[in-house]
Image 1 (cartoon, rainbow, N blue to C red):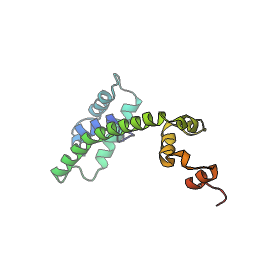
Image 2: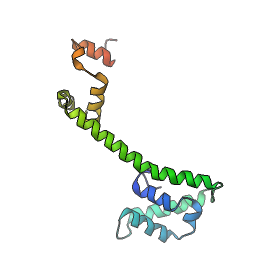
Image 3: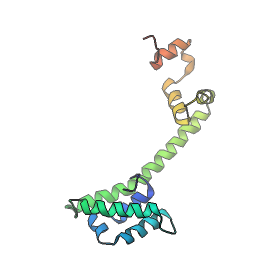
Length: 150
C-alpha cells in the first residue's frame, strides 16, 4: 500500500498499526494524518490521502481482521526492528567494498565502460581476482564465459 514495504514510513506505520483491527479502529483521516506525520509532511497531499484510502480498503478486505496468535505480532515486531539494522549493515558493507575497489587501478578502467557503475565494477573485479593470472585477453574472456565463438 505504501509502495516500498521496506521504506522507513512503511515500517514505522506497520510497527504502530500491526493489524487490520488497529487500522479499522481509527478514521481514514487519522490514518492519513498518521502517514503524513511519519513521512514528515506538514500538510495533507494526494500521496497521503491515496495511501490512507488504500490502507483502509485493504484493512476492510482482509479476511483476518484479528491476529490468531500473539506470537505473530511478536515476530512481526522483531522483524520490523531487524530490517533497518540489516539495511544499515548492507550499506556499510557496500561502502567497504567500494572503498576497497577504489584502491585498484582496474576499478576506474572498468567503470569507463558505459553501463558499468560502482557495484558492477566491484563485482567484476571480485570475480576476476588477479588479472595478471591471464596472459591473454582470450583466457579472460573464456574465464568469464562470454566467448561468442563457444
